[in-house]
Length: 138
Image 1 (cartoon, rainbow, N blue to C red):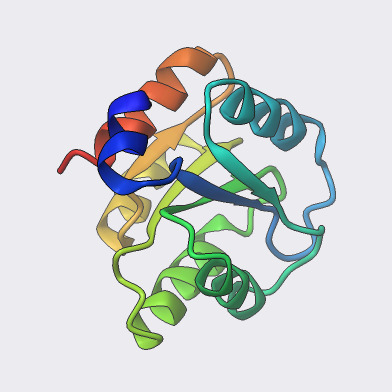
Image 2: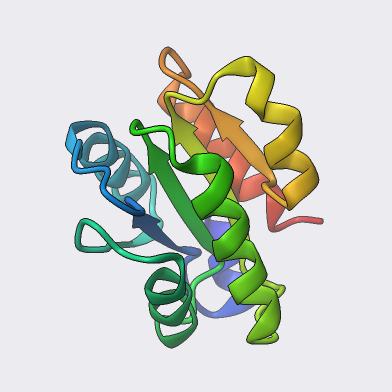
């Protein structure tokens, strides 16, 4: 974290979002605290965003990542829409990661859509943060 901040002149920044009608926010609040505790600048978006609203907020806040938390099974529609919107706004440097209730049979679909990392319940929080930070090294 310190090496990144020294090199870039700022902390890594992540926007955490719940897309669509998914209002279950306990997990995303835990993840937000963990990322902040580890040194990330964290933006926690309001609930019920559209992919377009999330992309706009990500671009305006100059984030490195958008972390999508999903519990309500909209991930196969909403996450690709977010990625397409970011691409359409020439914001391909913003990487998308996902966490939550994401069935294993959907992981390959999400990766092919452009998701960089997928985390499911039981993921160790320090591994989530560490693997996310490693994406900035590539």
